[in-house]
Length: 248
Length: 259
Image (cartoon, rainbow over all chains, first blue to last red; front, side, top):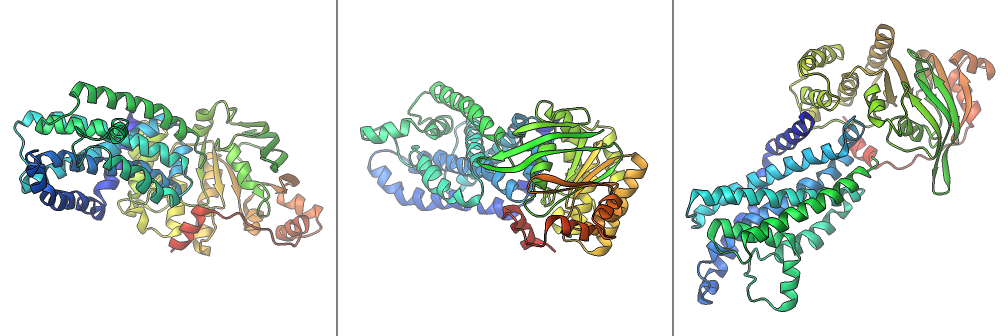
């Protein structure tokens, strides 16, 4: 247990000691909130869909979470490059414990960032009805974050160096983000697009956040919760297998 | 015998990196594994340290089998890799503490052992500094301190003095010889500095093309090859041609940042 804790703590220390990374990662969400939020606001309202800011913010929070989480998982590539991975692989510790500690740490960081984005969103006019909404949302933030740190870890375990990084971000993470209902409603989409959206795990994270924060969910919260948990278990198996296969 | 290697083989697809190597290391010995680039040293060390699985043959470390009793073997040895394996964003103390937790050093003993070892390598005053600000020599000393934290029976060192200035090199060997004498700790190292092996090693094994081509004390090998200089003996055994080194990703990054 101690082992998982110290690896969790390591992720947190590394994050909080890197001010540029912390501040920099708030740039994109802020940009989306302001440019897209206020940019599409009038169109959304004209379409009879109501306040776009209320709709969008859960999506922006989800964006921050998926990017932070996947990036955390990809840290293994850096550890491999800078040598620290060897120290972990040679220690008398199971790979599962190592992976668990890192992913819990990465997920914690992602949730923390998600909360910062949430607090920033109050500046642009987002509002919550009850404090209960916040805690429920944090729970779903964590599930989503944990899912994607596992995902990032699995991918990073299969890469030899940072070359594949750009490919991953552009052809995997971006599509997952854009096809999750984060920035547009998924109620009336055409059949093929809707199909793609329902196959995307992030969709359920976004939906759950929208449900807990502003009561605008498309699926039921139970449905969202179940899917997230199932996919987490799936990635737990796959990523721990891939991680255990690494030879430094 | 603390390390027993018997007919060890490692094949990668159709390339045989290690071809029926056998040797033993006695407990409390300082033992050197020498060989030109590409001889199979790193592959051999990887098999001894549970990182690679042998194709065939057997390895016993401290009575345990690295393939089937991984964690018992890992608890038995400490290793200082050729390139740093520290977390540069953490402090020296934090790196030590992380290692202590991973190796299950009991909670009460941790601060005591960490302090003792950091003082031993003369880094106690800099324990709160981030490792990224350390010089190459300091990082190497920290890794030695860290590798000893869990009181291993064997300390593996892969090119321990590579890229270091003479004073630091001398210091590092002083630490190691001191430990070997006081704690009767077995030391297993590889190096390209043959004269260091000559001065420090009790016994030496020279490999080339994955096979053992000489083994014995430095004196014996020098005598067998009619020379007073172990490096001469080495060159006459392995030939004068330059061997190509395998490109190493991590080495490239470190050499760019080496101070």
